[in-house]
Image (cartoon, rainbow, N blue to C red):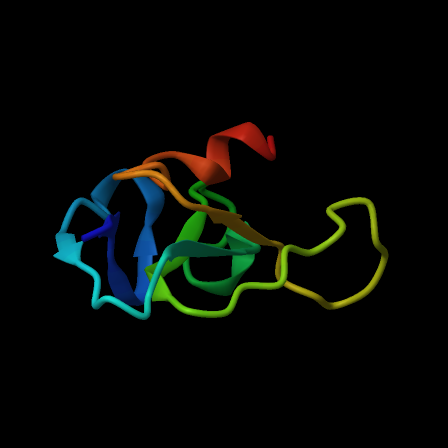
Length: 87
């Protein structure tokens, strides 16, 4: 089965290292990136939630508004550092 890094609570991206074996119906690793200020004001730390998912709607990172960018991928442990790629 697919393996994804998983942290259900808001976690600094470099600390989200728990590996979960997804169920048969969960074939996507979903990562949601939150703004730096949500948890650690002024430190420049990205916080994320990550999980196995059966549904994932990637967000347009160029969109303006209060949305939290979501990234989706479907290979083992592919969601290791999605936050970094979004700058």
